[in-house]
Amino acid sequence: MGCYINYPTNINGIPYLRTTNTTVGTATVDLALGSYRRPLPSVGYFTVRITDAIPTGTTATLPVTLTRNGVTRALTLFDGTPVTVAELIGGTGVFTVFNDDENGILQLMSRTVV
Image (tube, rainbow, N blue to C red; front, top):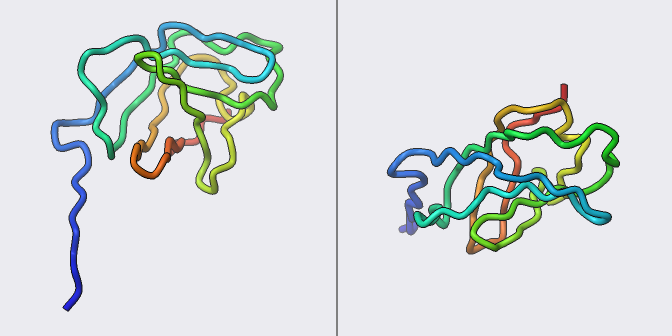
């Protein structure tokens, strides 16, 4: 008989986070999500609203990171490839992310290219 494990995600709703700062560096573009006392679920989805656009002229091949409560993590695509500025270009807007702390996954779920 098989073992069926149910990993519930977002029992209390899907968190909605706004960027508080966008920093363009030489190696990455970091989207800061501010400091929040309530932790994100260790496995689940959250929504990010880019409130300040990535500046025009930013190198499109720079990888994107998300920083929250002082922890910075690389945002990736389905196959683990880093999300680049090219995937998030187009101003302000909203995208969905899947987070799995235990397995090191921070994956862009909704494509944003215009």
